[in-house]
Amino acid sequence: MEEVLSELLTTIRSSRIAPDQINLPPFRPDVDDATSWLQQADATKVEFSWSDLQILGRIGSFLTGESKLWFDNWVPPPTTRNWTTFKQDFLESFPPKKILGRLLHEASACRSSDFNTYTAYVRQKVTLLRHLRKIIDELLSHGIIRTSTSPFASPILLVKKKQGSYRMCVDFRELNAHTVKDKYPMPRIDDQLDRLGRGKFFTSLDLASGFHQIPIHDNSIHKTGFVTPEGHFEYLRMPFGLANAPAVFQRAINAALGDLKYTMALVYMDDILILQT
Image (cartoon, rainbow, N blue to C red; front, side):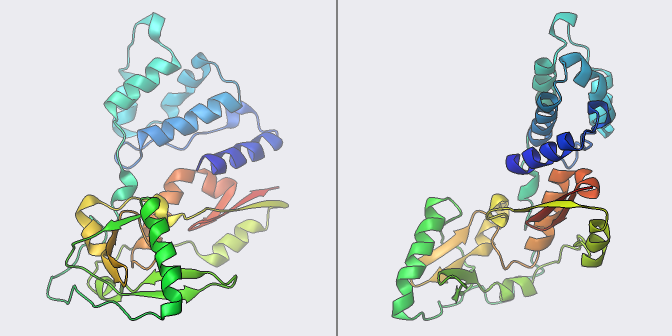
């Protein structure tokens, strides 16, 4: 996300927009992560060389709800009324939380337990086992999956990519059939095309392993269990194939970009297009 913010700030600077016209995304204490929001504020402060007095004079207009009330009553000693003290006090009042980790905990609760949670692994060609073993080893080493003893066990398939390598796809159809769907709206392509009409220069960003950046809630990890000839595993990070994965990721990336997604950035899941007029 730091790379995305850097690109956006570069676009803003090249557009010669005055610093006092730059707005931060609003901080909503019930849904936003304070650490991520402060990182955006820090980057903007550095980019436009704002003093502590300047950013503290503007920061209140970007706070909402409980955080706005907190700021209005924030009275540190005059000698310590600076940006560093603000950040420390702000994080104490609004501690970081894994907002993006609510994948199955809220949006994907199973309606019942009367479906078959265990499936024998699908037989794979011997020639493909080394590819599967490599994929499993990489996912384990990156902390994306772990070994499992869950009663849930979806089968997997290996799908060949254009460049000749293989992708492991978990068949979550049984789990998805018993999942309460997240109705968060996906962007309409025709709306995105309309917004493109006012741009002259475009920068395209494709987030690397975007889905895997979102942690799965502890109460739902066991539901992602899958079986292979290599053993039984479960996801710690959001995989492809879950019914609610696109909606969860779209909500996360929209929250990360804030108001920029309506002015300078068009986003569809892990594809971001920065436009400049």
